[in-house]
Amino acid sequence: MNKPFKFKKFSINQDRCAMKVGTDGVLLGAWTSIKNNPFSILDIGAGTGILSLMLAQRSQAQTIESIEIDEGAYEQCSENFENSPWSDRLFCFHASLLEYVEEVDDQFDLIICNPPFYSEDFKSKNVARDLARFNDAMPFKHLIYAVAHLLSDNGIFSVVIPFKEEQNFINLASKIGLFLNRSLHVRGNPDSKIKRSLLEFSYKNTKVENNELIIETARHQYTEDYVNLAKDFYLKM
Image (cartoon, one colour):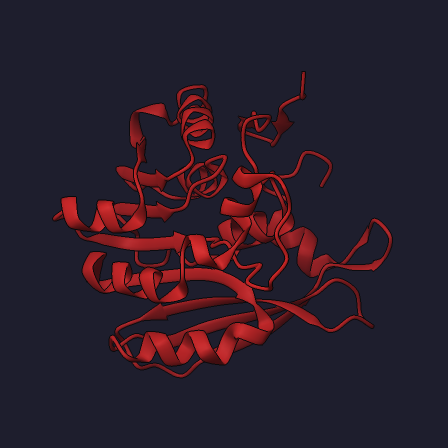
């Protein structure tokens, strides 16, 4: 029996989810701006539901919807929502992204996504894990298409992707009139290359706020920046 992953205000069971709780998701959930006081939030490709749960903790959003294509992950995400203090605000739908876009007329003030992005030719024998990890399960073009249909005029779209995909993703977003407003480049330690880009878009063309985050200076020696970002969530911070 896998133990639940305990955060300060909620717990996550993840034994039926291919993609476990990871740094990418926690960083995105903590970094994403809620300055526009979102009333409605959409989490695309929910997995365990961690992004929705973090935003339920951080914001006053009345409706937080999430979509998950994998049946096991969908069931687990729904249970994680039910067991949280915010169960009345959290909803998970078992659907593909394109199915959801076709069926839903709503618009959202914040759309957040930690997409699958191991787009190299490597596949393991675990189909569920591959589906959760590989770009072909949710191509960036599909993601941008969905955002074009579902993001409100004053909404924010927030995503984490590999750094090497950043320019390609910004170019795709620009095709639907989305401008990059903020970015965060993440390094594991001071000597490592930039691994991840956290990007935040809206329809407003503002001066871009670029920052860098180093996670640790040595093994388990976390930087002050990282602690400040994650301390509301991780138990030991």
